[in-house]
Image (cartoon, rainbow, N blue to C red; front, side):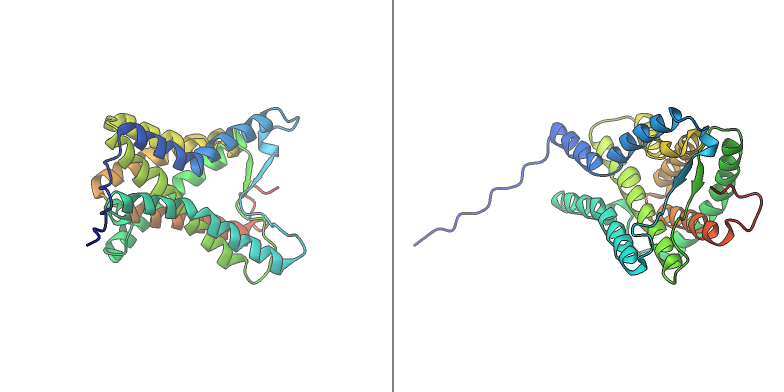
Length: 262
C-alpha cells in the first residue's frame, strides 16, 4: 500500500523573514514612491524656477488627444496601483488570517462611513489651509490634482483614483506596516513614527507642505487606528479627502481666485 506523503507544516516566519517581507512590500509600493519623491523634490530645488512656480500634477493625461486610449491607461494604472494590497492580502492569508485582521472589510459599513466622514471634515479643511499657506510662502509646488481632459469619464476616473490611493495607503502604510513592526518588537512610538514619516516621504514631491501635512495626518490616522482597530474608517476618510480635492479642482480651477493653478 502506497503512503501519500503529507505536506510539511509551514514554519512560523522568523523576525528576519518578516523584516525582509516588509522591506519587499514597501520596495514594491510606497517605500519606492518615497525615494522617487525625494529625487523629484531634489530636482525641483535645483530648478531655476521657485517652488511655488513649479507644478505637480497628480492625475495627468497619459494619451493626450486620444481620450479612449487615455481612459484605458487610467484604468490600467488604477488597477496596477492596487496590486500591493493584493500582495498584502496574500501574505496575511499565509499567516492564517486575512485583511479582516486589519479591519479592512464591510462589517461595520455605517459606523465606518460616519467616522470616516468626520475625520475627513476635520483634516480636509486644515490640510487645504496648510497647502495654500505653504504654496503662497514658496515652500510648496503648485499642486494640480487633475490634469485630465474635459471628457465624460474624467470625474469617475478621479473618484476611482481617490479610492485607489486611499486603499493602498491605509492598508499598506497603516494596517500592514503597524502589524509587522509590532511583530518585529518595535515600541508604539517607533511604529507611529515609521508609519507617519513614510506617509510624509512619498508626498515630498509636492514640497515641504506636502511632507509636513501628511506626517501630521499620519500621526492622527495611527492614533485613530490604534483606538478603533480598523483601517476602513480611515480608508473612507482618505477617499473622501482625495475625492473632494480631485473633483473640486477639476470643477473649480480657473473659476475661483483663491485656488492656485498652473
